[in-house]
Image (cartoon, rainbow, N blue to C red; front, side, top):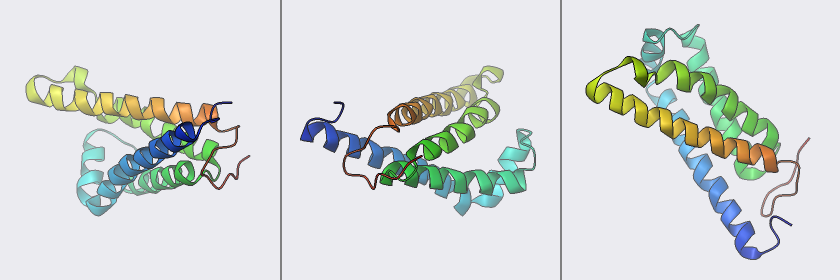
Length: 138
């Protein structure tokens, strides 16, 4: 069993908390500085940025809460993945830049790749019962 020890269950809870904090922080930052976030998204060619930025940010928050609580974690993981995959490629296109801009965008790109990987792990584990979670799923 994946979570047969107390340490395994506690470590998995810690991973969910840390993941939710990072995703929540990023989404909340978008919402608290919505004008700048929308402007940046528009400059990168994001369609309907005035709608997609807040909608995507709320989707990230919902996804993070789903993973944190274990309430429909597969849906939450898919929401995070659905947001991060296109945004990572569109917004953090470091390969088109030079110097410090390239380095900054590459850091954001790689951060998002790590978050996508984490969300994929949560998705893969969503069919089994999670310790220290509400445990509602599909």
